[in-house]
Length: 559
Image (cartoon, rainbow, N blue to C red; front, side, top):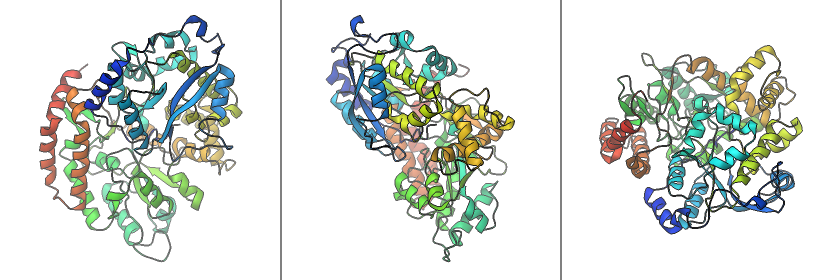
């Protein structure tokens, strides 16, 4: 189950100019050897083990939710020892940085600019991946995947063809993709159960009811400390349009806008290529937020609340309601449960009368990419680690699963099957109905056990059980998608795959900043609501219209 961090992660923005300069300083990666594989004497045996030690340096993505156990380090841990024992590969840390902030992005940008890429590294930015591949800086994994991937791994390729298509450029596989089915990206409204009970409230079903509940939370005493007005009605994150906690994605969805960071291109009811943030109904959503802000229902200091600051407010009990993603019980609401024993529960987004709600998700062709440098002598080593991961986590014992996957330990492997456990939600719902895990895929059985274990109390203090329960149980987030959002035909998948117009690559960062700045100014009252019309014209003139025109050609209607 990949929270976000997968999730949850702030998109990387590297300018085309930077990446072009990288190509120049590295010679496109074509002058330092071939990526076609190693000499036969240096290749692994049938079990994936090398006769002589092979070194692999890798970039470690750390995050607030990541854990190091048993006095382990990023250099010496359960995965580094297993990989050494089974494959004779020595792991070396090229660099480590926090991927839940800008730290990893900034470090990777610097490394890319230097031309000295790690042997293996990850990015969630399709722009970075695409340009590195086009610049010849990534190993072509096509042949080594076909030759060394286990049958089990090749089954994933069949199950998630869009994901592998997204990792393919000009017919060549340049990354191990996140194996996506992005329905799980849908937003929910997360509410503290104790605040609902203390205010004698019901979960809101309409936007009007949501605003009324926000007023109770902001003006009353929902936390029971005897002080009125020291809490927030609705939390906002300063990044607003990111898939973080406190985004506006769920709210704008109620107004028929399938919002999704900077990537949400789709065709409207007339078949015309369009973009989420320029929709006329955005004005209604922003007007509502501006009114809530003016009334004091939203924290006046939200413009300084990044992810970590917002999580501090959530953990300290200042926030009772926020729009957010399906992994909330993994992070940050696990903090609330551990601290106060309180469950923050996901609910379907409240809807607006007379408007069909629309929920935006990314194309299945994009997601986290695990890449190998074109200069690395052993690209097949990445596939061998992938095989080992699959065998150890998905087809071994429950003890191995807990040791090598649980508590975020899977992140200590340079290569892992970045397949969100959410894809098993439908299977697990059926298993819960029949009260048996018989017939579940191996990777889904522990998720069933965690869900049942939390519900019956035997695992009530287990982080993994609480996180899984919040997604997979009948009361969890994912049944809302499966049983409501999808049947309501509310899901809109972005057209934008791995191929991107040059004009978009050049302007996406500035357009993104323009959007967040304009929306923030409107919500805080620095600009009137009608300023939205000016924003739309600015967006179109600053490369937006040209991007729409190019997208129309790149992804023609009916294709």
